[in-house]
Amino acid sequence: MAKLCGCLVTSPPPSVDCENSNCIYTPDLLIPSKDAVSVCGELGIIELGKKISYGLCKSKSLTHHVSIVSKSANIASIAYSNGQISYILQDVTGLTTAKFTYEVRCGFYSSTGEVIIVPANNCYNLPCPDGFICDKCDGCIEQPDGNITFVDPSSISYTENDVNFIN
Image (cartoon, rainbow, N blue to C red; front, side, top):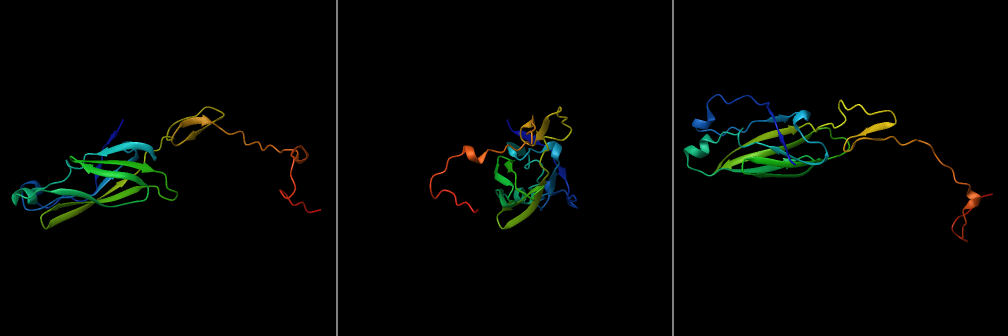
């Protein structure tokens, strides 16, 4: 099941009403972790079409096109269709947020916006019982015991040339 994301507009609103004038408004958005999906293969959806104003396209009777211009490495897949961005995040070491840039184009006119996604943390506020740890994808799982088991080397048989012993 896909998770529909809420979002916060982080760019200032246009000085005029773009829906009814000659401009295209492509806001920068922030998807907070409470509204985002995790890096565990879930499908997230952003209602981007409801945030964009296409006044210029309408006033010039031009069809608008939305495309993804760039994306960070931790976005496994992303697509725009019918006013929605569908995305799946993946875990990439060193990246704590995901980011993509989108463009609205109609004729020779275009405008871009940026979306930052803070992935959901499935371990946030999830108390695990003793002997369990929180895994970001699977929730509470049994904690490994941490014991190291040594095998008696005399119980292992070797054939010639498998191992070189130094005496």
